[in-house]
Length: 350
Ligand code: ATP
Image (cartoon, rainbow, N blue to C red; front, side):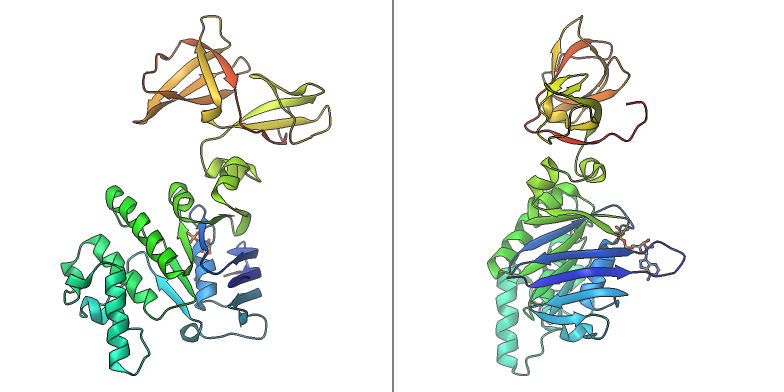
């Protein structure tokens, strides 16, 4: 069953510019957590605003819980869509206490029900002892929990979160990822959140949508997006990726780092570019090796080593911190991809 369904959404803010969103379709099931990932200006916030009802689509349909919220004839106003929102800046009311912030959006006329709902939410987000405090008396993480509780208190059918973690420092961010994930799962809330951060999207979401210039380039599970990127843009956006020229032969795809299985099943003779991630490149110290180390970048848990191949192409490899490679060293370069991702070649010199 699908709880949220976006079908063919297009939104153009001005006739001169490219559309902010171009024919976007995606669905979310009940309780599913979806991340929208993409560079600045790719249309992520516009998707949220169309779902919330802050914008009207030019074409396409927004459906929530089987009911049409927007199409070429219908436009349901934001306040009756049953959608909750958490903003990057939290947007808490500074003159209201934590409990009054949480109670703000509740419609229940019965004070007892309202109080019970607020108490329940305070408990869910672990802020019971802070109920009477004002936002300025809270830490960043606590403020975010209030924003989450306020958005969840009316029990929205869909929760939208716009870069909810970007104001937090690294430690707190990791803690809040876990907390928000646990709360959403506990309540079974369907959620769609926007982020620039690929790790964050992969950690929290059941499915991830990658946006590029208003188009959804791929929508799938985190592993699928990382290991089977549908386009070069996705491959590069969700992790380091090098592309090596290759030619399909009867023995497999011939590349500078050896033959790779032609599992994409291109016809013999096809010129391709094979995507290689640094995890899949092994380096063996060898003075006669074909690769020359160009640089090494310390990243804490490992090094990212750049190696130049005889053609001039550069390839990267993750190497343990016990590394013995320095710029100028030579190495044998072996590709050991767990699976092969290749695209038709675009460069004329291939
Ligand atoms: P960021 O990560 O920087 O927040 P985003 O992916 O959320 O970016 P959007 O805010 O959805 O991107 O914007 C998509 C495009 O639409 C951008 O080119 C932006 O300039 C344009 N845009 C967004 N809102 C408006 C508006 N109200 N009027 C005109 N153009 C707009």
